[in-house]
Image 1: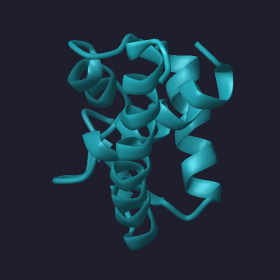
Image 2: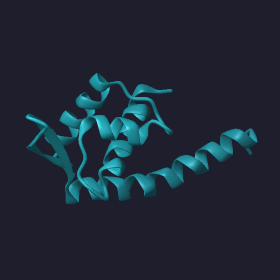
Image 3: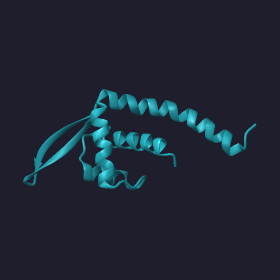
Amino acid sequence: MDIQLKRGLLDVCVLTAIKNEPSYGYKIIKDLQPYVVLTESTLYTILKRLELGKMLTVRSIEHDGRLRKYYHITKAGLGRIEDFKSEWKEVMSIYRFVEKGGL
């Protein structure tokens, strides 16, 4: 799969995983596991990119004697999910054209 396309898909998957409630790295990986396999290093790269893009915020909370980072989606992150849904309709149209073999 094209790396740019995959990168965009993974960004939206991570945003969707935290859409309904804040979450932390290990839980995000587990929540996505039935759909996509992410390593910790890949996830934390994505989370950092999304934070820099102001699509999520981070808050550290002590849990069992250590700090755990919780990720919260922002309005920009919610907007990215909605943009993706619109864009995906076009991607599916192109897929159907290719699958059909053209005109």
